[in-house]
Length: 155
Image 1 (cartoon, helix red, strand yellow):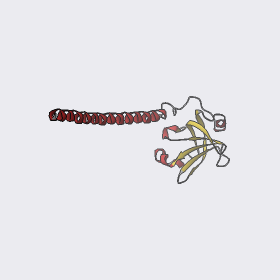
Image 2 (tube, one colour; image 1 turned 180 degrees about the vertical axis):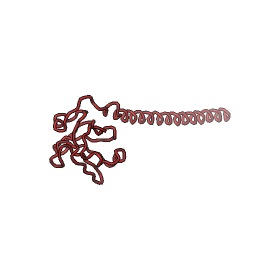
Image 3 (cartoon, rainbow, N blue to C red; image 1 turned 90 degrees about the vertical axis):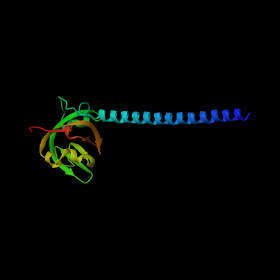
Image 4 (cartoon, rainbow, N blue to C red; image 1 turned 60 degrees about the vertical axis):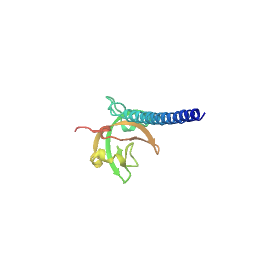
């Protein structure tokens, strides 16, 4: 009887150990799958903003004054940068006139400053910019993330 009890106890303990080991492996597989899925979604986000898709210059472009008619569109705008204002957190490239009489603005946030180099170098230049038009304080704007979204004409 004792022998059967020990064998039964051994089988139960062995089964529990195997199940726990299996759960650990299963949990590890679930963690790996979640990390792979997270990586895929992050990679997809990066691919969506690649220069070959959203930020490729269009063969057709609009003027800064026309930008207000294209809110929500990804488009290329050509125009004259009348003024560049750089603060601690954000930079503005104002088109056609200095703020507040500007017709269109390109906005660059601090974390992207380094990729553009000297932002004041765009002042008094004719440029092409490409990206998505949005509206801020009732004026059209485009947020720039990458240097390849802006091209100085004639250089």
